[in-house]
Length: 74
Image (cartoon, rainbow, N blue to C red; front, top):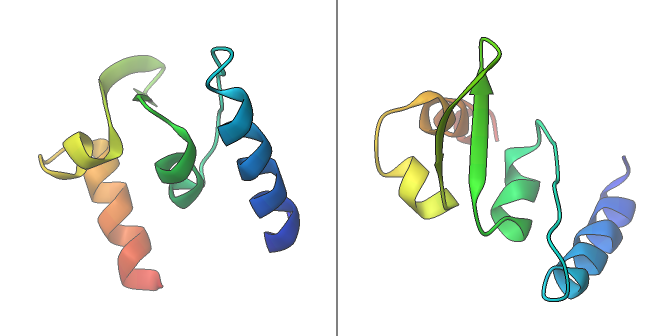
């Protein structure tokens, strides 16, 4: 997805989330950070952790390791 399109979609989802529940599936963690109130991770077919972005990056887990890898590439 182009950056401008992604920003447009994120804006729409942020406007809608006050009116409804939204399930947003993505490998783009930077997008989840701006949309999700609660993040669930699936590893080896099982949901293993959940929490806000801030909660998940404060402990060592699959999400925080993936986030740190992405930040090093940026």
